[in-house]
Image (cartoon, rainbow, N blue to C red; front, side):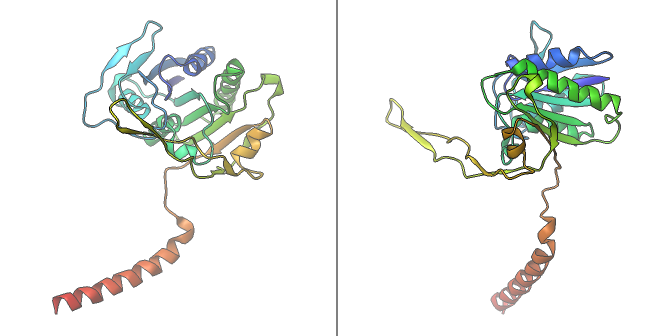
Length: 265
């Protein structure tokens, strides 16, 4: 069993070190780490296409890349490793990736890159920042991976899971709850400052508070001490409204053809 680990907090982050140590302790598992050189939070699935990427070796055996989380997994999967991992694991992230966060998250982006290559993948995050009860989170991540191995869930068919772990001692954590994504309110307003040269600087504001944290969401589960597990997919098609948009597209096309005929007359 071969596992590739990446993250978006950087190869020196406590979360990835704890995750590596936890998964390396599983019998029969070989773990490789390929992670960003620096913090790359909120990079989503971005790939670096217009500048070269370099891979370096850290003293602890990790490899790090001057690129995004998705870059790291992409490079690993397309030649760096020399083998195809059975599982891609991302994290443990310093803070939650719930609801709308999953669109922006580099942690989820790294896992999704593995999924796009046809490999099962898990993104692990702690709900609160600053690494409280990190070892407990790493133990919970190991338990989840071990159970998936024992139940033969890690096979040829790819899947993508987003897991958020509350910052609690292991014995105080609740169940692993299957959840849908919640929703956040809009982000806080942009923060402006003036630099010494009199130029205005803009800082992206913090994420909005939970808007939909009703029962069944990841927000609700973690707020009650449970571990949230959400299966994700890449298909962004709005299937519920395909019929509406088919009718609308037909009307738009008819109208545009009428305008075009008038312009050509």
